[in-house]
Length: 447
Image 1 (cartoon, rainbow, N blue to C red):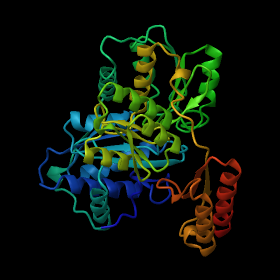
Image 2 (image 1 turned 60 degrees about the horizontal axis):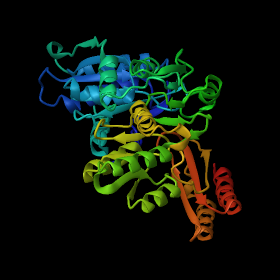
Image 3 (image 1 turned 180 degrees about the vertical axis):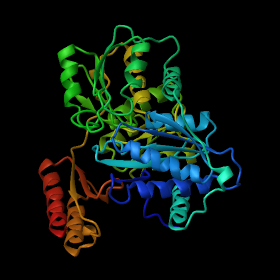
Image 4 (image 1 turned 30 degrees about the horizontal axis):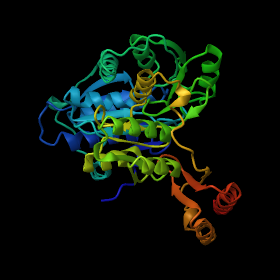
């Protein structure tokens, strides 16, 4: 069974354009309700969280209508991080968790992410079955079995206490000045609260959402504002989250950024030293830098690569009992603590390393020398398939032959946006630019 509606992380697109319309959200809610309320009983429940996009109100209402029409009881969490939905799905004994967010995308996009009763994102197979139900006429519940909906006011606080519980017992952040950039997104309240309650002096950035400014000049995809705040305020470290707070970038005391690869290298090394890195293995995607792989090899550790998408990282972790994984983009998954990427939790792990070793952030953010990497994106239109064009295929083949023994090439369609991503790694900067630019030129000509 194939999926057309669902991408690598649920359903995503521009608000009020297919598939992200209120009508489709209602159908998705009804189909998901029918899938999970398959025994006709009235005890089934779903938790729904969202980020701060204006369109979140519309999708929250539409999903609620669809879900209750099939007999599901809906618990509305309001703005909370994506990992909070994974946590509360299990702790509140829900059958389903839904997060309304387009993560790091601009405000005009939105998305719908699903979590199963175990708190983990739904499998491809489950999403395919829900998609098949969407294509059918879903039978509504009888009038007496229509579900109820109510607001839950303490979801943010439940999540905050869980995150704080992962911090080393007795450890405090007293004396640390921390910039926290919440991307005007879902963590704009909870992240500063957690850091302050643990003792830090908190300098907040991106904590004034207005429905339009999520990820706009702030957050993990644009760390410039946070970097300026770190330098201006003399902060010890900066933590930059994305719109739904499942990604993180770390800034050192000089405002220099460390991506997910550097953070994973730090954590893998620390966990290995503490004999808590299961199987001596870190799971990352094909996008992670070759330098990370070399660093782990030098430590006698292993890098397991997956397809792009944190859900595929988690699937590999669960299948093999590994407990640490993530993406270069800043998704860090620690299954000892959470079921999905959690930017705030990962940030606390970094702060813990600073305190335990007494090291400045700059001493921890450079675990390995990165192999020069170039990534360029080309946007394509509906119905286009530029990777199927002969000239594009020939350009890719030529680039691969030039990189043999010198680097690697990765060409793929984005799972969340209509983009062709062209990425290469090579220690020869001139060759790196040549191969990427030649492919980008052919892809651009084909769209």
